Image (cartoon, rainbow, N blue to C red; front, side, top):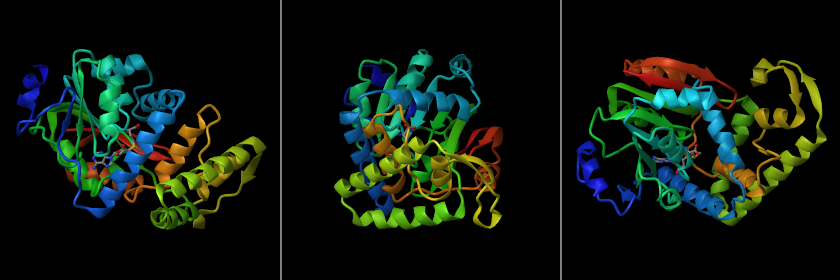
Length: 318
Ligand SMILES: C[S@@+](CC[C@H](N)C(=O)[O-])C[C@H]1O[C@@H](n2cnc3c(N)ncnc32)[C@H](O)[C@@H]1O
């Protein structure tokens, strides 16, 4: 069996059922458990309701920008010498499948702590070089120095102790391996305060009420976008609000409340994006310096670094 040939990568025997193995499906930490539960709800619903793959295509293009690959060819060249690849926190697994397609010589593992791992395994069962784990990316079964490329995109801030997770993943890199990681950026003060408040307040809501709240945020984003109004905002450093020309939806979005809306995405995709923000308990935000410090503390080199309003991204290596 093909999965028998993978066992040399693991520090204990990993039992696969077709293309999936369950390493761990519960967390002893309350916030991680709540986070897993919230993502299980999001992904299972989105898998059923999503009518287009517009958001997936958008996300793939964003990966090319976020980590400096620029083009698909650029990413393909980067992957050409990578044999063992993981998509740490893979959600529905479309990035794992994409990596497997761009690197047919490689073995790709998508790992998620939520039920999304099962959805991903079902979706991509016909791709021979991709496998899925349900488990915690802070505690993986790989031997040290086995991974040639780790993609941890939009995930690490959802883990129980993000800095510790980062150190664990880095310890699995081969001497020439590369680790691409994304963390949420700290935003303007009013947005941070509202986010902290709502992320706790939403715990008193059922999943159904949380979807209603997400739908209201989508509707707010839509109505603001349709106003199509731009204005010139002054710098307000005391609130962390950067001056300049803003579309009104973007101004409210970056500085006050996440009210995501993308006109080309389905309602289910837009709602899922808002649900994703306020539902999970674990969702830390960082300054560029705080993120870089994780790498410095482990004596890792930073090959690439990029900051934008939503996130900081880096590729680090030994
Ligand atoms: C915002 S989603 C991103 C999914 C995917 N990387 C993407 O970009 O589409 C974050 C994912 O991280 C997963 N996650 C959170 N904590 C995790 C952990 N400790 N181990 C594995 N997956 C985790 C969640 O279940 C969720 O699917």
